[in-house]
Image 1 (tube, chains in turn cyan, blue, red):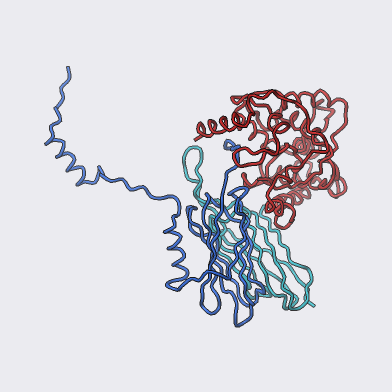
Image 2 (tube, rainbow over the protein chains, first blue to last red):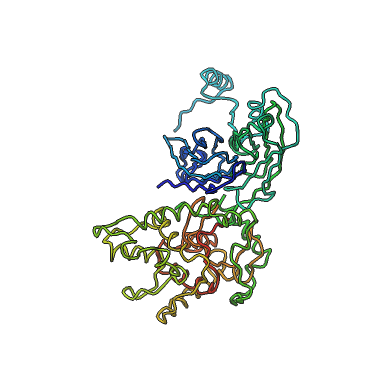
Length: 106
Length: 160
Length: 263
């Protein structure tokens, strides 16, 4: 069960700088761990994260094995208009998850 | 009763010569380094900045000097920037020197960000230096380095 | 590596007087009780305090979905009998482990969930320490967040609490340590860089940074027992439930923090 936790203010004034917090459940297996019998546990990580605000990309991140499990990423953006934030996580083994949040900008 | 060919020096050298020629007996064993090194980190930084000069300043790296657990270290990178259409932070690149890999994360901003600040949580394999580099809209690079001490949890568990 | 680790810990313990002092066996006075939260660094505390940054909340969300999902041959969800968990499950985790009349022994929250599945949903038990049981337990326990631990007062529980207390007090394992040696007599000192806490299990299932996932109190107890180099127990063992029961009774009055974050 993949879950995303997003925190976006429900309302903002035009021009406000708002903080967006995201949390995605994912093991972020580094590819450097071994089983007790000595075999490498293969890498399985989220490699990129992007956020679009009414269709336009406002933030992007490259993730690595060094990103902690259940990646937490927070960033800022200027509230320009009411609408929708779309979030996308892409990773190894065809991992692809999306989430969305709305905002009212007055 | 045992028959055994007494190993003469000539015979030994001939054998060794053959083995070396076939490559079955390497005389030098090269161990591949598992951790990143300061050189690997420098190379990773060069891949981002190219030949440009990286100045120190403008960038702030908030990371606990003594981490509770290396599996999850909170990190906040912020850059003093007006974040206008003419003067903004384009991207932030964070590096380390002792993990198996030199990168901790790349973050791409823009004038719409409002504030050049990103928070995340990273894994640190050992006490080491962390370097954050910001690329500004005017093409300049700015950096900051922090030293972090990493201890391990006291009681480890058996694999479930 | 393991032998080296054991020798290091033994020398540390001898140096700090853990091994040769007599077991004082005095419980921490209630005005000195401190949650594991207070021993953590500010950044880790901030991670617990922020519901959007707390990775344990991902488990709680999954648990909520499971609460509403139909299960078993009876094709019923938890919600079908219990309705809104915010109402029906409020205070439950604060008084577990509790006495089960049919089994005539205490059961912890995980076991209660599986008993419900067997008795009322006609469903297979969820395996210990796997995602679903952890998520569902976290969701149920989170409904008691902020409430004081108030153990089940059934008199039938007394002999089981006593057994749990005996286990906590007696020396065992290769290091000849009792739980009380560290957690009653030496809390707030450090062992190999980590704070020795009071062993107050008020945030379980907990997101432990060392595990990089949610985990149960029994997982933590098994870790401790391994660290003490003593004979361990399987998940669900009666001895572990009795120890949980004693620990929760010892933690009476402390607030539930599930899903807590711990190093």
